Structure formats: C-alpha cells, structure tokens
Image (cartoon, rainbow, N blue to C red; front, side, top):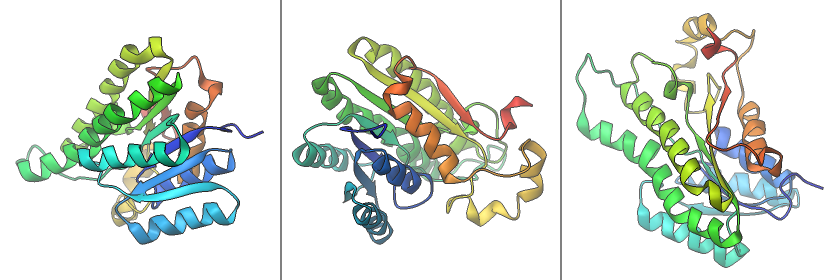
Length: 249
C-alpha cells in the first residue's frame, strides 16, 4: 500500500524543482495529483511521466496570485477526483532586493503576491473542500529565510517569514476540523530557481551548510510526503527544517 493511497493532492509550482519531485513521489505513493504551474510544456512533461508510470495526474495552467485561477483549479480538481485531501503550496519566486538599496514596491508586491498571497488563496479555496472531506493536510513551502535573516533578500524573507506565522495561525484555526497546516523550510537546494546564483554563491553556502553536500529536490519531497501522509497525524503548526544544518549554527 502507498502512503497516500486514495488521497487527492494539489501541488503548485510542479513544473520543475521541488514541485516536480513532490508530484512524482506523491503519485508513486498512491495519490491522485493535480500539478499546476505557468510553465505549460515542462508541467505536461512531469504529468506525462506520472501517467507513463501508471499514476493518475492532470496538469493545470495556474497563476497562484490569481484568485480566479485558484477557484478554477479547486473546481476542476473536485470535478475530476471528487475531493481535495492535500495542498502543497510550493510555487514561489526568488528575489534579491535589499532594504539598503531601496525597495522597488512593484517588485515587492510581485514577491508578496506569489510567495505569500498565493498560499493564502490556496488555503482559502482548498480548505473548504477538506472540510467536506472531513480532514486534510496543507504544506506551505517556506524557507530558512522564514526563520533566520538572509541579507540581500528582504522581500523574499519577509514573505517566507509571514508564511511561517500564517501556517501556525491556520493550524490553530482548523485543528478541530482535523485539517493540519505545517510549513517546510528548505536550505540550499539545487533547483532551477537557485541555479543562476548557485556557483557564484557556493563558497558562502559551504560556510553555512554543515553537511558535506547540498540538498536536492527529492530531499525536500520526502519531508513533504511525511507531512501529507497520515504518519504525521499528530503534527500541526510545526516547522520541518530541511537545511543541512544551516540553522543549527
């Protein structure tokens, strides 16, 4: 038996990186996966791989900052699979804005609309379906930037820190309905989002990451799988840190 048998999961940002790894792993563990992203071609490749392996999945174009898109994603999920059990708010963008250099409010609002508001909208529209199902699990992908200060990423860390606190508030609000809300805080993970700066920042990363290697998307996906499964039935409002020891310093 799979760890997610008979579960229906919505995973945002599933075209590559951690989202793609989560979608494939969830399918292998028995979930019906609704994979969403704006990168249609890459997303379809992920879903096709799942289908080729005998899994159940569908790809939906999705701007997480759009409430209308969220309504459509949840509606189509319920129409096809009958319910929503799991929501993984994985979609996000990087940002290198600093307070010292002055904040570009247009870019600030963009980061907030995707990294924070997108998760708010996801919970707003998915949780009512979880209530109908009698239980559910929301996993919000934050960052170690939501726990410790990361110089040079003020908008990103502000959004991820807010998401950390929001997850706790939602956990308390929905606990009596058996809907769990937890946050995941990855450290340095080699993904398409981190690729542009990865080599340049390598000496800095090595200073803080205590293990002699960096994480990959699968390292995070297995943690998310645990929080999505009934194995973590007594966990809500928790923070799962997957950072190679960065925040242990």
